[in-house]
Image (cartoon, rainbow, N blue to C red; front, side, top):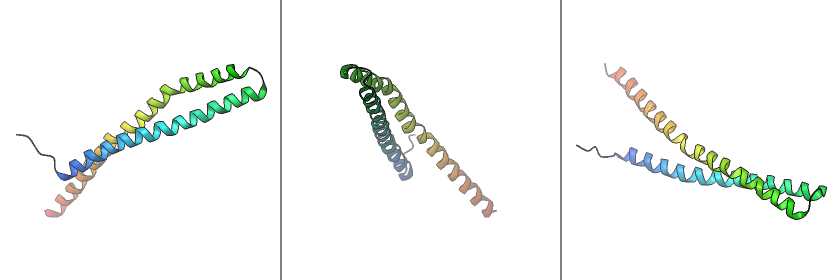
Length: 107
C-alpha cells in the first residue's frame, strides 16, 4: 500500500527543490563574479607592470578563469546539496522530540 505525502512533506520537497536551484545559481554566480574580478586584477597588474604584451596578459587572465571554473561548480553543488539532508534531519529530530515530550505529559 502506497503512503500519500501529507502537506508538510510536500512543503518540504518544494522547499528542498527551491533551495537546490536557488543556492546553486546564487553561489555559482557569486563565486564566478569574484573569480572574474580577481582575473581582471591579475590582468591589470600584468599590463600595469608592462611585463608582457596585452595578448599575453589576456591569455593569462583567461587561463585563470578556466582554472577556477571547476572549483566554482564544486562549491555551488556543495552549498546546494549539503543543507538539504541536514534540514530534513533537523525537522525529523525536532518532531521526534516534540512527540516524546508530549508523551511524557500524557501519563
